[in-house]
Image 1 (cartoon, helix red, strand yellow):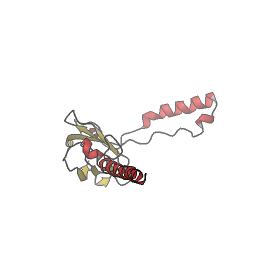
Image 2: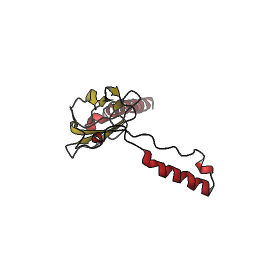
Image 3: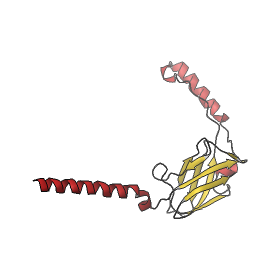
Length: 160
């Protein structure tokens, strides 16, 4: 009985090790590689900008990211920060002014108060403005292209 128990434990431990090894490289099995970079506009890092990589090869998927406070980003295709598929991409970068806030107590408001708060929000949505030149919002006008190698990209600089 001890040998059987030992065998089961050994198989279990080996299974966990195999799953860990393959789990860590699951993105490589999918073909994804890391893509990290930073966005600059007029020489300054751009915080909270949406970065989108549109593949020129239609078999690949679009990859997206949101820049952090220092303008840095890591692309996501299938899961958070998993990278992109190797290949050529057209890139867009957009950043908009924050939409107006809705009163945090809106759920506790009466019908008329809630209606007035929503109207104020909807009327103000036209105040949302692009904070970057609009040419960077479309893949065919941005002029930004990136080729992702099979090793990925760790120090990409997108200069707007």
